Length: 60
Image (cartoon, rainbow, N blue to C red; front, side, top):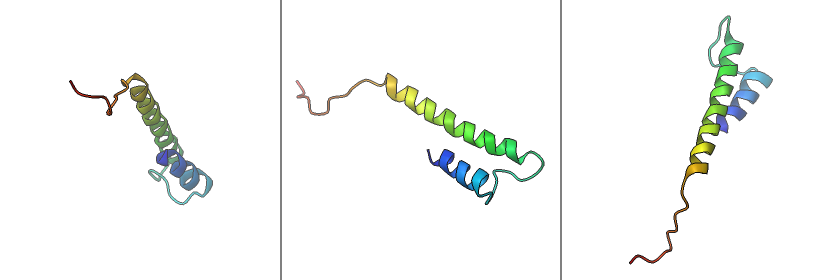
């Protein structure tokens, strides 16, 4: 989430800095945002497939 928020605010809204300055800086900034979205999606998918672990269950 940090990458998305930081990318939107610092790169696009405020223009404080960019991922890489130069002729294609907007493409780099958008790529940075897409990477953040991909990481969130991957984390969500891993979390959805995880088993529930009962840490309070008695061991036999």
